[in-house]
Length: 278
Image (tube, rainbow, N blue to C red; front, side):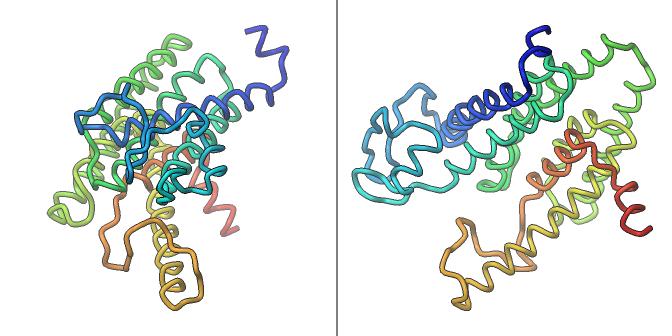
């Protein structure tokens, strides 16, 4: 612990960012090969021409930029998702080191945000949240709660965490049941259990509200961008399916964003609303 007191915070922030880039590169491989039967130890290759990547083509972030987002052999476009996942993971690791006060919790939070990145990307592409990822989050939530109780045993705090998990699950399960699965999937309800447990009560209310706010804003921005692109006002095309007001949009990324804002940035919707109104 003395090391953390002596060295400046930016030292750990730099390490966290670099480590996040490396982990993000691994997550890309994991997401692509998950449930495909392919080994994680296999060599990386171009998805278009099967060209095996050389060592200098495997540097996270830098290789994508250096190659201009294209395969060196066949010049096919490399999905921008690979770059974004590496960058997002690095930024989240940086956010963890910046906002989580106790360094002993950093590795746990690195694992949590890594799982959340995988869930977000997988849900965006496949509209499903595998149970394996949810159970991994349940384990991480239990570890975080155990450490919290070890520091200061408080049975009421634990009960409030359980209450938050039940409320968040009931909310999404109720929406799923009432809409017969049209408004959201049951996977969202299962995902809400560990997320609600981690943020606790009453912060779970802010998590739910913010997830819908974020979802509405981002969806409208994407629709507006695609509309402008369709009219020829913008040349760059978003790497996503075309969206309309009636389109089905995976909700897990929005729920995860709401969770991260509350858990790491400590945003309280009620305080925010009072500040805006008064």
